[in-house]
Amino acid sequence: MGSKPLQLKFVQSATRAHQLPELGPEVAFVGRSNVGKSSLINALAHQRQLARVSNTPGRTQLINVFSHVAGGAVVDLPGYGYAKVPGHIRGDWSSMIEGYLLEREELVMVFVLVDGEIGPTPLDVQMLEWLRYNDVPHTVVATKSDKVKSAKRQRRKRDLAEGCMLEQGDIVWASASKNVGIERLRDLVISHLTT
Ligand code: GDP
Image (tube, rainbow, N blue to C red; front, side, top):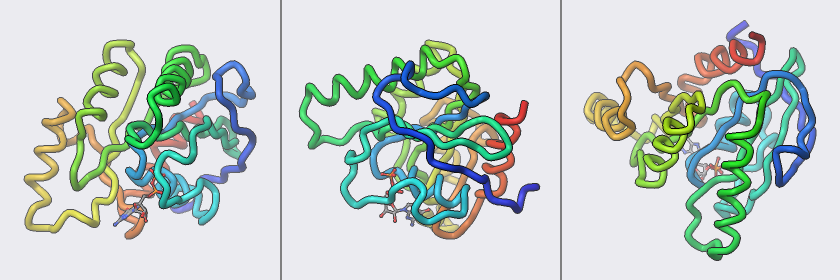
């Protein structure tokens, strides 16, 4: 099962949770703009163009829903923390993400993406604290693991876990570029969608 891609089909974009279709258990991906979220979703699905990989962080500002062929759905939430977005849009944006995370009954797990090389950023920590405070189930995924040199890996793993206030074993390390950790993450996603 693990070697098969997640079979995802784009269904719809929305700005509010109540506009979304009900497709069964749902997992969501969230993270700072440019963290590698689109690349990771594409790697999980083995499709290059499913989620857009863009060089313009913050351009994808909608909630994007993908149905999982074997049941459930994957939701790509807009990236946070893009400095060039004006304040009023940032406000809309966090109310959109927060509304979804608090209200969505189908939501069973939020994967919080943190840059493996530089994370967690203060905004990532804020997001994690907010999820903890609101009892939203979540798992941290450290992205771009290929960018961390092997000599620094142990220390980086420890620092990232400490920064997230988690144990090292709680964090899933992945590289979309080098296909590291993708199978494990895929299995984890499938286990949440099929329970
Ligand atoms: P998003 O804004 O979170 O959707 O991030 P993207 O998927 O668009 O990726 C942002 C940038 O990081 C792009 O230049 C990607 O090529 C790069 N990137 C994404 N994943 C990886 C990875 O696993 N390793 C490396 N080295 N670069 C990555």
